Length: 178
Image (cartoon, rainbow, N blue to C red; front, side, top):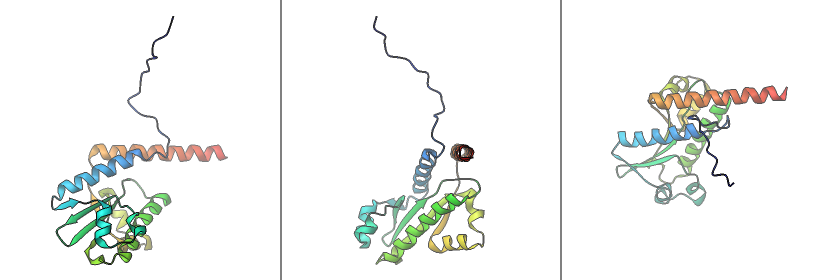
């Protein structure tokens, strides 16, 4: 007797590695899409075209930001999006710092820098943390405009659950080392 295909019952929750950032990526894409819809005057443009228009070298043409919009004839908005909630840990600060460094360097290497508006888009929940007076927050605000955006309840839950999974995974990894 030949057995047929094995049927499997899938759970409604997908087990992922604790460091999986799929949820953050999904929320970032949703935020960027929503921001574009909220600003119909911002027309999306491919980074490759924007970089060529700005006269950037090939090194900077490869440094693809999360989103680029044209706002009228004279402004290009170059954005990095950071979708996390909760207290900023050292790894989170590093990611924000890398995004800010990319935007800062990009603006310094751009012959038409006056046309460039560099922004880091973050959930509204991070606004207060990034308005502090410590050197990190001041440097971040000097490198790029911080643009807070409200999350939907579903987005907030996805991010909270992902953060908890990541924290649990880090705790398990520390326990294995001891």
